[in-house]
Amino acid sequence: MSSEKKIIFALVILLFFSFCFLSYFEKKQLQPSDAGWEIYFEDPQSDNLTFIIENNTKTKKIHWKEMAGESNVIIKEADILVVSGQKSTIPLLNESDGEKITIEVSDELGGKKEIHKRFN
Image 1 (tube, helix red, strand yellow):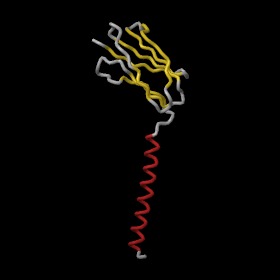
Image 2 (cartoon, rainbow, N blue to C red; image 1 turned 120 degrees about the vertical axis):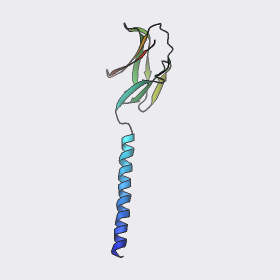
Image 3 (cartoon, rainbow, N blue to C red; image 1 turned 90 degrees about the vertical axis):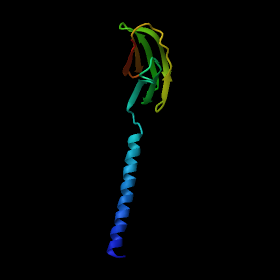
Image 4 (spheres, one colour; image 1 turned 30 degrees about the vertical axis):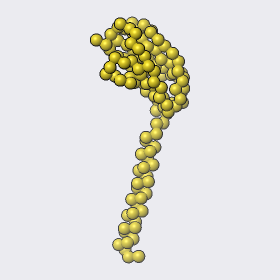
C-alpha cells in the first residue's frame, strides 16, 4: 500500500471511531437519569388548569393539591402513581372565583414543587 492510501485509510478509521464515540455520548445525554420530576401546565396561556407530572426518579407515589386564592384554600387533592420515565396528565376545571390557583405537588421523599396561574 502506498503512503497516500495509508493516510486515507487511517483518516476513514479515525472518522468512524469519532462518529461512534460522539453518537454514544449523545444517546447517553438524551436518556434521563435520576434527574428528578417536573410539573408544568399543559397550556400555560389559557384558563385550562390541566397539568402534567413527568417523573424521572425511582419515586412512584406523587401527591398533588389544587389551592385557590392567596390563603391557599384546598379545592382538590389526590395521590397518583407515576412510573419512572412516564408522564401523567391531570385534568382540572377552574372551580374557584379567585384570581390565583396554585398546584402543589410533592413526592414520597419530601420533595415539593408548585406552579401558579393567575386569572384577571
